Length: 221
Ligand code: CA
Image 1: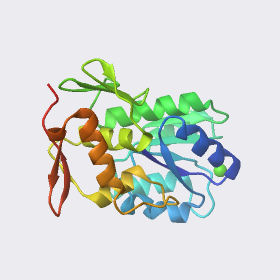
Image 2 (image 1 turned 90 degrees about the vertical axis):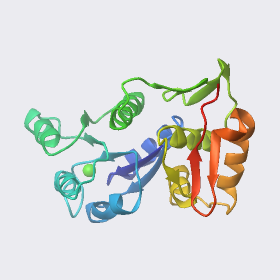
Image 3 (image 1 turned 180 degrees about the vertical axis):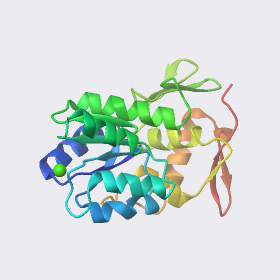
Image 4 (image 1 turned 45 degrees about the vertical axis):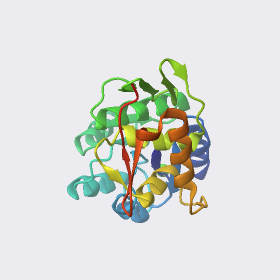
């Protein structure tokens, strides 16, 4: 999962990035409101952690502009403003959840998981696809009740495919999902992950659409 953090305190951002990594959430960090305004136009984030007190543009204004532009990405406000009117204003301007500083990292991760689950129209943390079961909290998967041994990139690709049935996902879209800005991407990396997932789950599980990308294939029986 790919998360955007908009936060001007580098210590908090560093803590979030390192902590969320443990939950297989890759976070990109921006520290200014001005940069944050266009961030959702260019990258398909699964959720955003938004600080309110930001330089240049206030977090609340950024949120209002995102929502006015039609961005539906779930937003978790993380802020020192804990007064009730602030919390209400945040929720009323389109935030999906609100957490006050100081916070526990486990709670941030749990709330992000819940927001992402809801935005994908799921009320359960488990996704079933035939004999395949994904546990989106533990970031693990099993086939016929037997745990699959997946690397974090394989897990992210598997989750991306299973949550987008029927869609053709281009290599660029998959790379956007799997890597942060600062990570080098080997040109054949996606091909390699597809190969590994097919070996572990079944050849027909992923369909290659030549020149277009990849698509979720048949359900493992
Ligand atoms: Ca701040």
